[in-house]
Image (cartoon, rainbow, N blue to C red; front, side, top):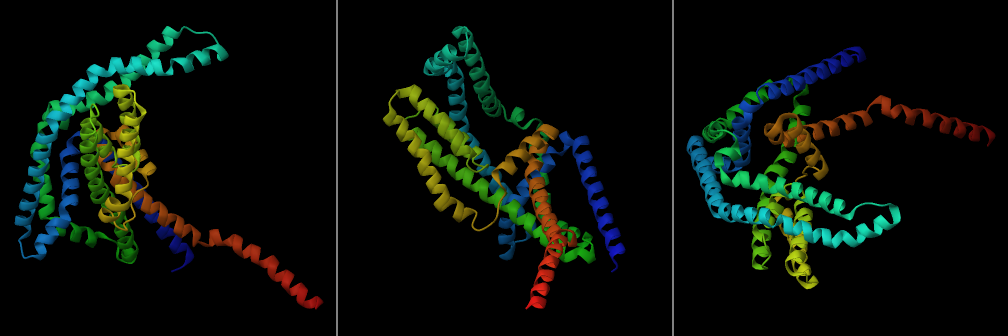
Length: 377
């Protein structure tokens, strides 16, 4: 293949995939609200597909395997909601009622530093500082409590629409049942000339995505149980709520433990005022991090290469800002695709003549210097 035809092929590829990406964004923007049950169903099907394959290897028909696995999954989710829903809701309401007192205590803690700043950097009314601090603390805590209270107070309100409750299980079932046919159909669409390259890229995307979806979610679930039980046993107010929150946020590595540590330490100090008790609460999160790093992550994620926490956080914020809750569900798969494609593009760039051209130019003066040295010798 000539250089000109290769450039044409490359240009055609870039135009094709750019147009595909624009059409994808337009489709999500146009049908965002309608897509939610289908996106949820696809995510559940992807999460549970290995279990369906396992039953299929044992001569269980795929449609029966899909029914068994999906039924067990939803029974498990419903059971967990019934078990943890009431205490979460109760502690969320208690936290909402306690927030004004915590705001006052926090202000009393930082007041000496505010006085110091006032004496050195200018005049100001300390009462105004207090009002601003209380208002901002109240807003920040009300956001979290409002979300938790809304999620737990009404299943329909939490999911957004009743159609999601009906369509999500149906979508999950049919996707699990037809998963092999869908993958074969997709495989047949891959251009034959680039088949090996695209298959390798798809394998890398699946590795990253499965490492996050199956591995990191399993780690987060385990940490939520560990933190919630440990903080409750330690007698921390709102310990169950903080533990669940820290576990859920652990989907983004280190985020859950960091937020949980800060919040629980503040609550422990407000509750007891003793550094020994604060140290016990902090030790729970340190032990949790030790368990995660040495047992949970190696066991549940193995050697799979996941996604960088900052990349996940950016993707979630960007997806939520652009397309709402549907965008947040699509953010991680899109982040995995973009990450793999960027890595592939950088690899191709480093192997290109454009990148290596500098090496050739740098090598020529060395050759000339060596030839001159030989002549002198």
